Length: 361
Image (cartoon, rainbow, N blue to C red):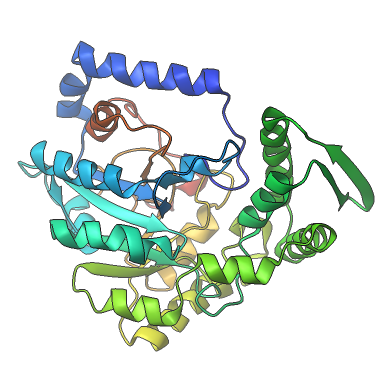
C-alpha cells in the first residue's frame, strides 16, 4: 500500500503484481494455501473513502477506495464465509486455537472526514464493526497533513522551489509523469526528517506557493464533534495513532513514548472510554522498531497495528503489538485479488522481523 512518503511503484510493477494475484486466483493456489497459511484471519487497512475523481494527477489514489468498492467488498467478505469482527475479537482469536471460520477486521487510518460522510453509511448498512485510528492533533485542528499539501502544490504548479538541506532547489514539472516523480522524491525526503524539520520544510513550501496548510489539514480531518458521533455507534472502535502522526523511527525514544501515551490519554479524556488499540504512524518496516512495540505493550494497549503485510496467525504466533495488516491499493477494484490476499497465499511463509521480536517471543 502507498503511504505518504513511500516510493510510488511504476505502472509496470503494479500491473505485474495485479497479474500475479489474478493468476493465483485462477490457478487455485489461494485455496490450497489458505489451509496452511490463512491463519486466524486478516486485518484490512484503508485510508480515505470517497467517490472516484477525474484528475490526472492523484499520487495518493492508492490510499483511497470508493464507497461502491467498500460496499461490494463487505458483501463479498460475507459471501466468502469470513466473520467480520471488531479489533478486540481479532486479538482474542489470535491467541486461541484455529476456529472453523476465519475473520476479517476492517480498519481505517488517518481520521479523514470522508469516513463520516462516505464510509460510515456503508458500514452501518451492512451492520459490521470497524476500527478508526485517530492522531489527536488533527481533530484539535493542529495536525499538519503534509502529504496533502505536497500533492496540492505539485498539482497546481509547474515550477516549484523549496529549501533542501539549506539549499534552494527548483523543479520544473509540466508533464503528469514528472509531477509523479517529484511527489515521490519529495515525499520520501520529507519522511526522513525529524518532525520539527519536516514542519519547517512543508511550511516553507506552502508559503512559497500560496497553500494554506492549516486550512487544508483541518478541512480534511474529522473534528471532535464528528468523532463523538462515530463513538456513539457501538460497532465503532476508536483507536489511537499518536498525537502528531510522526514517523516514530525519526524521534527519540522519550518523544515516541510521549506520542503514544498522550494519544491514548487525549482520546480517553475526550471520549470517556478506554482506548485499547493503537496503529503505528505509516506502520511500515522503516517507520517503527522493537522499542516502539515494547512501548505500546507497556502503555497498556491491547494491540498495535502495523502496515507490514500478512495474516494473523492462531495460538499466539502473531505479536499483538506488531499486528500485520493488508493495505489495499485503491486503484484496483478486483475482488479476486482481494480474496487471494485474504487467503494468505501471497504472504506465506512469513519470517518474523528480528528487530520487532520481543524478548521471550
